[in-house]
Amino acid sequence: MTSQRPYLMRAIYEWIVDNGMTPHVLVNARAPGVRVPAHTVKDGQVVLNIADRAVSRLEMGNDALRFSARFGGVSQSVVVPLHAVIAIYARETGQGMGMPEEPQSDATEMAAQEPEAADSPPETKPEPPKRGNHLRIIK
Image (cartoon, rainbow, N blue to C red; front, side, top):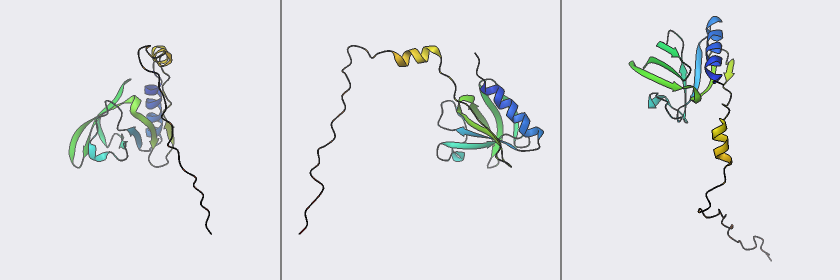
């Protein structure tokens, strides 16, 4: 099946706008494919205002959000793959939706369950260092 993320994003965006609120997205800025100005990232995340008055040429495709916005007076192109969107919400109320995790494909699940190659050495955990007695007798 196709991902439900783009449909949920568009629906929540429309609901927020229809209620006169300002849509924002919380993005994992460290995810592959994310293109945002570096100075906007804090703790690996960025909050983006995607209201019509804040951006131009907003595209909410099935794979990514794309738009142009001004950051510090300079127009920049922004690309956010949908897998990097953590949540979409209204700035004024905080109401919105956290994006659900995408289920793994069957091929990904099978690869994760395959045993390791026979020629690789078995994993061994190092033993923790032995410590002496931590209690002392004080006279």
